[in-house]
Length: 219
Image (cartoon, rainbow, N blue to C red; front, side):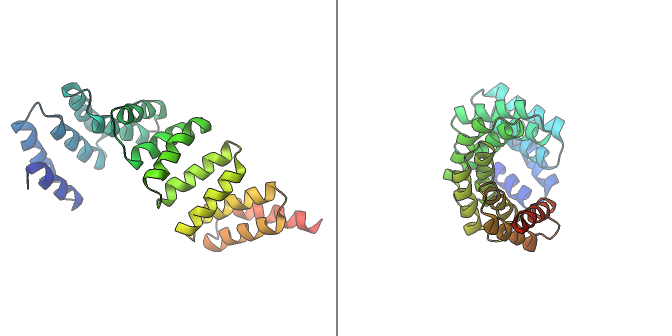
């Protein structure tokens, strides 16, 4: 096993000092190879040393401006700090350079969602669900963004799909309740709100939706 792989294995076992020592050796032995810097950047990001992580990712890009995973690392770093335009720029660069992973598409879509550019988020969140169709979080966020873009029928289909993967998904039930309420399917809406509250009794929005629906049913 080479030193990079050994160090990554140490990271996975939360042996961060051992990982850092090996990554340092890798960089000293191959100072012009961006991989060591990217891996050390990932380690620093993992232990929340964001300023140093940024320097390592930037050094990797300085050595190889086509290092897609370095841009992905920077994107994660800026996303963590809620610097969504900067995160977006780096995730887009990673995608342009050929990084074809569900996570980068998901996070790129989420940068647009956080900036309330819902329609721009859709193709990236869709791609994330295509690359990892069993990921309930990606699927839910795609459904939510469809709903925010006024594609309610498509959103309902996606939320139902989320429930086939994760049956106890309170937010999927809540959003199905909202769509049903919007379309005057009051009995259905009530059932979805009640299911959301069964799963998560403190779900304030579902409680409000239930109360509103019960009021409409009494009229």
